[in-house]
Image 1 (cartoon, rainbow, N blue to C red):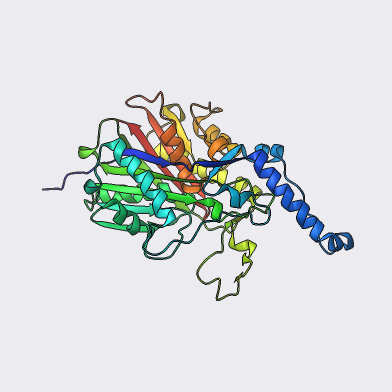
Image 2 (tube, helix red, strand yellow; image 1 turned 90 degrees about the horizontal axis):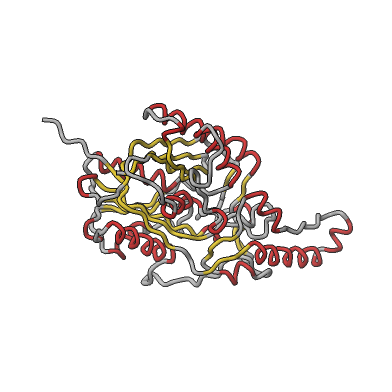
Length: 379
């Protein structure tokens, strides 16, 4: 007798938003103060032509390039200090809950509450995020312990696609009968790996944490989302890179002034735009064809929140027309790019008007390159 087919669904999502935010006007004022100090300190070299003067930023430049108006952060003062320009987070003892685990737990508790689920009902925890604050013990195991969950947990990193890769991994565990309820947690303190002194990228990221509860359909609450299909893809590229790691000290890459600039987020933005948009669009359309879906069948697209122009083009290619804000909602204006959490925030906040039987897509894309798509239908 064959085993019954187990169907994974999304039961609920959770969100943690920091209580501090920085708008573009504040950010530009801080950046330009740093530029003025830098150019003043290096006036002789700039005059002699041995160094180039730094150019100031502007609100208009940021909003045209990205669509971002503000971002939430865990430490506003440290980022806006022209002499520091990074979050100041006090180191915690081994007995204290780590900051990444702390915000992940809050998002996870929100998801559990929305599903009417107790932590004891969960079988596994995946911490899927772009940057872990340490190699081990795994952040996922710390979150598991803090929530009081039995079972297993582990970390996974696929940069901005971590959440969607985590959803497919959780769904596969359920299909294989290894778990009935899996928490995918995405704590993202992106302000820690952003170079706030780089004009081309100082505005991109914000901080947040999200969580997705993936469960077997028979135990899921009413109003869950059936997972119709998932598709993952990776293609190696150096165009988005972060070289920070435990070997940096051995390489002499960390000194008393902190990590060198290539140990923070760097990207070739124009190349990323040119290469990622067609790759993501093609993957989505090909998977839609396999699932028997067309553009007119897609009620809503919850795309990765990296750049409004990228989302506009991808949505147009998928839907066959320019998407309305309802068809392809964004959270970029207030949250900025929050790496793996971005598409989940959009999904969490923009479900109004969705009816039973409506079909949608959660899709993320980023460094790697990586693309993760999750096609869902409202139960």
